[in-house]
Length: 262
Ligand code: 5RP
Image (cartoon, rainbow, N blue to C red):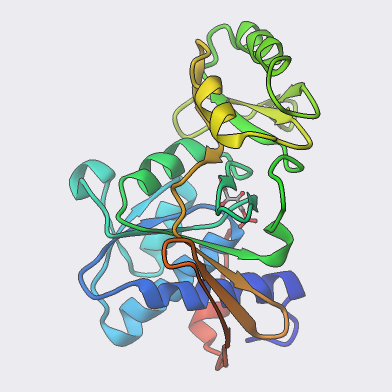
């Protein structure tokens, strides 16, 4: 691992490196989006090239698709794969039940579809993503552009009756224009500060006309792999109720650390 790697990248890399141990020969794997997931794609590509691992990847964004092809992973659509053995993805927050907030990178819709179409979802993160209660990270909600201001108003009204501490919604911007997702939609970020009942909120938000999907992942994640800056990796499995602490020794591999584009 390069000595000049930032502590945060080091932790993300370690989580990613450990998580690819879940990938077995011949698997169909959902490939997440974001900086942690980009490390995972790199690690997986390394196994494909160096060890001949055969995997088929279903990317959750155009960015991830480009990276996966670049590192030698065979890429197919979810339509082609139909069902996946495993998805590995990052998260913006995870709570003790492994409920998540996702969508900071704008790919929540594809990420949720892909993770739900998988036998297992493994989340990779550094410890900064761990929270007791979800909601400090603004909750992304993907909405269709048509009538988005009305959808925003309806969302704000709905939040009055929900167990949350903040109720502001903001349109996500890309420079001075609305941020547009891979599906051509907009994202409203909900500044809730604390979400009392995430399961209830996830269901209610999706009832609002114009809402395509929200970034709450409830009962979808099975395992979280947490990388620490000192080389430790913690693996929490919600189904088995196990927590394992491991130390990872990384040998620097030039291929893995060059040209990271995400
Ligand atoms: C993208 C996501 C990402 O997984 C999430 O934003 C975490 O990103 P990073 O690994 O860069 O911190 O949900 O839509």
